[in-house]
Length: 311
Ligand code: 13P
Ligand code: SF4
Image 1 (cartoon, rainbow, N blue to C red):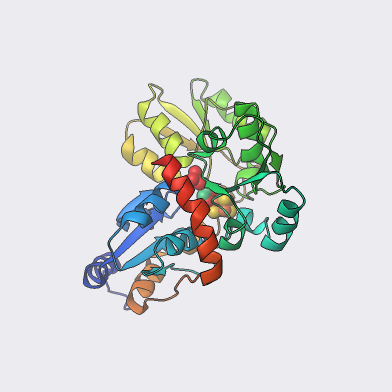
Image 2: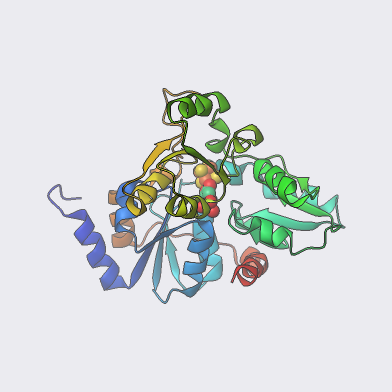
């Protein structure tokens, strides 16, 4: 990359020339959020991918988001700036082990969080995101046995708000598990009037402190509508970019993780995507997200079911 190059202008030019669209998750670095055509939570990214008429989708997020877009749009080219952008939560649920678990409970409906590989989605009856998990779980009769995977924290939270007893897979996200009750309470002493916003991937004791537990889009909406001035935000700190943009007069404080010497409230996978990688991805149309045809054929059903219920 030429040092004097205006990367943002070149990215926009390539998008136009190739009829490409850049979709970005709220956890992306600010520079990516600034240039994306659309930013949103996991549900919105899937909904956007399903309806775009672009020829190329560049997914600025993590790999499972690219897979979901590819499954929904098999004829489009789906690119991701860094193929190593994985997800510890998706990795905590290997498809072969999940298949054994599912086979041991044949009477259970299988509900999987979108943070899973395509192979796990292929074993699933309906996919959910944190925005629609409660609604989708409640679409099943109260006595329907359910397997919920892979996030045990989201699963426990949904169990607590729906009165269900879903069987949970023992998975978690390494970023959201690191928030500490003590550190949040210390911050709350400094900002006694602050609202505490918590993503349901956080551990139960952190969620108990919350004024609002919701997906990234849900937390953003709450912040926009709230009369409060200060907010302590317990989720990946990339969301602060859009919160500050939408609410310039409000004060958003990222909740510190247990070890405040590290930036562990940033997802190292999400942050692998950079402006220069995005430029190269568009220029060379590489790396591409591929999904095995047989897996995609099965995985589309639970994704489509989610989109239909959430429409
Ligand atoms: P949402 O944007 O759907 O809340 O998901 C959070 C997340 O961890 C995505 O990786
Ligand atoms: Fe996965 Fe956690 Fe990163 Fe989200 S924040 S992509 S759940 S590792």
